[in-house]
Image (cartoon, rainbow over all chains, first blue to last red):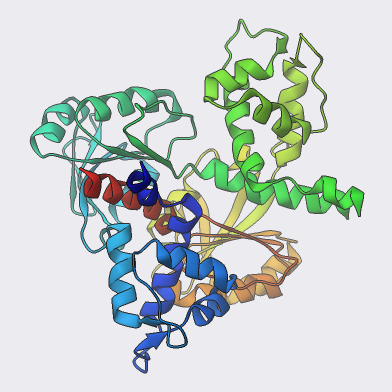
Length: 215
Length: 215
């Protein structure tokens, strides 16, 4: 039990790790060999204690005074995020958002490599978007299982998102990245991460509304 | 002080409100006049106590046994999120992600209306993407101030995101929706909401990596 517990990295920590990586990678050619928690904290306006706790999850121990070896820390964060490698992914729904993700040049450096897109629209099937083939949705199940695809990206309208998710899960997908503005049900062992923009906009417009009421 | 405090809705609450709205709106034609916290909780796999607390922030009080008036609750959530109206927004960076947002039909129902896009690429300036004009970045400051634009959407590469943000803030923008994979600095009074996909993927790939190590 103890061992399992240490594996679970809190969500806010995972969300902060890319920020550390960006700061470390962009320290420039004059990058020092050592980096302190206080430096990262200052750059990202975070509490140094928080930074130290987050970095502990990478399994790397900082040394008092000198801090972390910069290269070691970069590798440790990448390994923790799985960004030293990538998982092949299928994307379902070749609409505007789907096309943007197919053309997103950095997804690979964030651990995900989209190998094919799927759609049920006959006008889209057979086309190529940003170099990626759009295949018929009916081919998804067979291909996902055969190619051992572990990540499914859902960019279909809300009304069909659950059906697409069920199909992906049945085909062996272990993680769903959802862009549809709806709640999805997945089995407990399947990872579900929502990138639903309505949730993000809810925070922005909700705060803006509160400010206006206050003015 | 007390009054100010009640205005601040926690981020997780704001993020859950769209989920309630979706459930309420899709209850179908047989939608009952009353809805209970337990119903919403069950649909979204949440704790009913959590749902009740969240809904308190809308200023609406549920009645014991009967719960909330469904229509009233929908309106109260929309008003809390500012989704009963919309704010005009400028988008900067007409790349893949920018184009996807320009073509996103639901942003208006999420309280944001993109009125124009800006880019510094001469090949993009003057074009129209999903019915929205792409204007020269040099025109942004003047136009944002004159049109009282309050929301800025940043879909430029990380390297120029801070400069674009500074320009938007100088031009009177009160809220920044950032898609660039980088940390941005804004004055305290400016709302900054990150929709940076690398943070979302960090959670997905980080958890997938943890599962694999465990297998």
